[in-house]
Amino acid sequence: MSIFVKNEALFAIVQKIFNEKITFNKTLGLRVELLEDMRPVIKFEMRDELVGHYIRGMLHGGVIASVIDVTGGLTAFLGVLEKTGTEEIEESMELLPNLSTIDLRVDYLRPGLGKWFIATGDVLRIGSKVAVTRIELHNDETILIAAGTGSYVIS
Amino acid sequence: MSIFVKNEALFAIVQKIFNEKITFNKTLGLRVELLEDMRPVIKFEMRDELVGHYIRGMLHGGVIASVIDVTGGLTAFLGVLEKTGTEEIEESMELLPNLSTIDLRVDYLRPGLGKWFIATGDVLRIGSKVAVTRIELHNDETILIAAGTGSYVIS
Amino acid sequence: MSIFVKNEALFAIVQKIFNEKITFNKTLGLRVELLEDMRPVIKFEMRDELVGHYIRGMLHGGVIASVIDVTGGLTAFLGVLEKTGTEEIEESMELLPNLSTIDLRVDYLRPGLGKWFIATGDVLRIGSKVAVTRIELHNDETILIAAGTGSYVIS
Amino acid sequence: MSIFVKNEALFAIVQKIFNEKITFNKTLGLRVELLEDMRPVIKFEMRDELVGHYIRGMLHGGVIASVIDVTGGLTAFLGVLEKTGTEEIEESMELLPNLSTIDLRVDYLRPGLGKWFIATGDVLRIGSKVAVTRIELHNDETILIAAGTGSYVIS
Picture 1 (cartoon, rainbow over the protein chains, first blue to last red):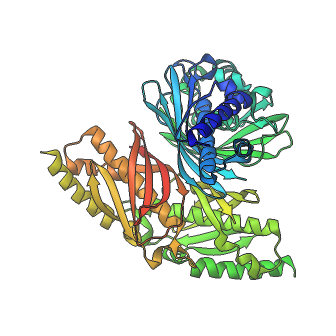
Picture 2: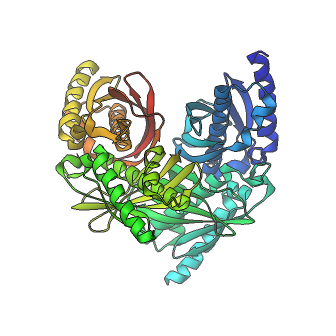
Picture 3: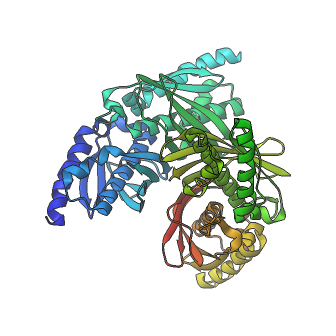
């Protein structure tokens, strides 16, 4: 099976789980938009429900932390998948619930203003027990809103 | 005006802002339940919308990070208020929008399971520019679910 | 063998490793002073070599981070020991090199001034793969200089 | 005065302060090697005094945290200098003691093995009160040993 076909199928499953089955992702309106070279891109629109600063209409810090955590976890998950090279998609999906956040750092860099936002992640290390990823959140004007680092335990 | 009366009035205003005006707090169902000795207690119930792990029904990591950030910020806010000793409540309320998170660490310690959850905060330092607070999240069985540290800029 | 005797023997070995075999601990002048209820106390004196701020003569931030890391690791190590309840000290000592820091947060709260400093640690969680500890550094006037949180992988 | 000349002079002063006046930098053997486009490069050799793991001869975690902090601080300092565009070098140097670390995260990614190590920093944000930088530490084989993020208060 070619990598391309596999990624197509993988993308469909990841989308289904992240966009539909993880309820709070739906609450936030997060969508896995694209999986380029096994790197996730998570997108969401500004909505009233996500506002923290009621005067300036900025994203709530918790929304930002949530997206950072979700993107870091998905990046770690795809990194593990790539490293272990599991051919069976269904099997690899079983890994997903077994990846959990150890800890997370979020740096709030600029006001969470924008029409929509995009989060991307990079692998710093995929070990046998622990994965570490770095995450960035940009708005629709490519302004860096927040950055973060997450450690995840693989079991 | 006695401290007690002041705290009563302060509590009412803090409750109004946190429970009603910060939209995402409403999305999460966060409530400022108590202000003991200027220390905030934030409570919320488990609800389907807050679930991350769809099989085990645990709190989403983002919900936990959000509560840690909100509680840390409120703890910092009350710490600043106590330090500056502003007598005028309305005036001190104007401080609120001017306190923003620099960065946050969240440690996910145990599964986010429970009927309801309680977050509490402690001041590590209130400086003239930066406040640092430490936060804990327990479930209804007093199990420590998560801990965190937040740095906040005061302006 | 009684717990008391065991702790005496344990203390002697921990002291030997930490104070003598870990070279950089010697460079810093760190000493494991006491093991109360399996909680480590690490002490060190202010010395010229440890200065960062050459005008005010404060501890270098790296010295503070180092002590936070060392104390967090030792707290995690003793926590693992207590949980697994290994009777054989020599055997448990073999665990030591297999505990390594995943990540560390250090909060610099007040100027690193003092004649000597004391670091103490508390367990937040000892899991089967990951341990999380919280650390505080006080000076000789019991002023809280820094705080931190460390995650450690157990293998 | 041309930027080039200014950077030459700046480099000389930064070198003098960092390599000689900050005592603990000397203890660690840290050297500011290069200032490319206002980005600092800090280099140090492996030495016995810096060892943490006495069996495998790896860098002590505290050495890594120290270098991450120093590099992050210098990156922030140069970022502030570039932003404010101070023409007078002597004057800008006076800023240096007034930049202090708020908090630091260090991610220990791979064993601290190597003949020498290089730390580099990038600015995430230079605000009017707070600067945030991201730091990486590589060994002589360009293996990423550690990464970090630091927040610094500017006063």
